[in-house]
Length: 250
Image 1: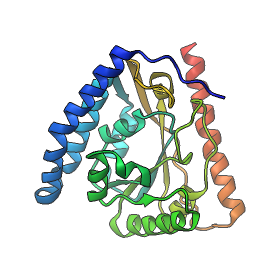
Image 2: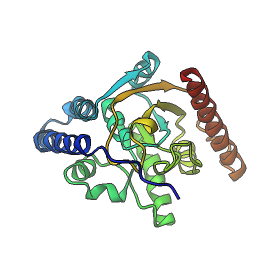
Image 3: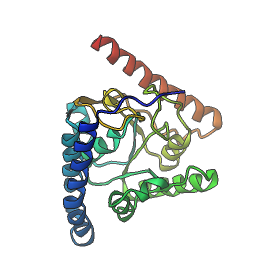
């Protein structure tokens, strides 16, 4: 059984106060933009993400290859390793026009943030209902294909409770094949150490975002065996990159 890390209560309370201040000020502005000025939404989301990271005391270092890739609007599935609440803020800080994210249904209950995600028309996945989740991903694939969109999703499906890379589900790979969109993996380094899943507060520090080699969509072969092979290949690529990064930091 994984135990909850000791809470730094002053840091936790200051961060929660900061988060709510940002939300109270920012959320109404973003909601208004959604209604009357949608083109300025991506820059506003980036401002929100960076403000939340600043409240956490986190410095985000983005590899130039990531910046160059994200600034190209094209059809693709962006994957990321998912170990921390910080992942949501990092995604916001990297947001570009033509991007959408798959979010779990429970996120809609987060005050203000959930309502904004709903208005942004993000695909909402119900993890408790496999058939409904499959239909959501199929609809998301068609949306990506028609709109030439970039979709962000975690192959792990949920945050790792241990900080280690979790098992990859096949949903993102089916989605990429149905959308005929390549998989572009984003590697987040340092998130698990700064804000692990069971910890109440975020530790200050640095997070690095790097780009891993792109994988083809897999549209030409959508057999179960091919999907499992693609999932394992991507998992191996993430695992090797994380181990290399850990070795360099030792």
